[in-house]
Amino acid sequence: MNNQDTKDLYDILEKIHLSEYDKFCIDNRERMNGYDAFGVYMKGLLKERGMTQQSVFLKADIPERYGYKLLSGEKRTKQRDVILRICYGAQMSLSETQRALRKYEMPQLYPKSPRDALIMIMFNERPGSIIEFNEVLKKKGMEPLRTSGVQE
Image 1: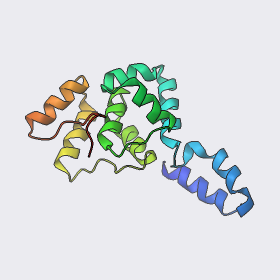
Image 2: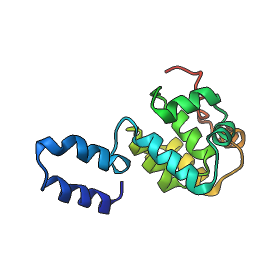
Image 3: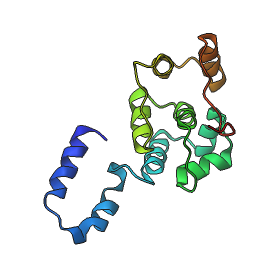
């Protein structure tokens, strides 16, 4: 959420009553973090770009059914790498990816982490497919982006 959105939400919250909370959440769900914020954000972004969810899941190399469940909120993952795969498959910029991670309530990429720093650079430079992305990580001696089948 950008700073203007945050300021707008603060301004609204200063003027509403407890009884208006549910309406506030419904009216502002796209601007807030929470259980469906990630899916709403991703679906809106894909629609703007004329991309299908199916094509993103194929590019991200994650099972379609699993991807649909993540975007609908039916399933949750604790694996940030899965969200990064989806973002890369959706050809998102680094700032869009950071926003998606925030909306999913995951840690953002951190520039002081060597692996995160390399991932940030690759989101900017786009070295190719997700397979090529992982090859770069491996060449630098780092763990590739995990798939949905790897449990932590």
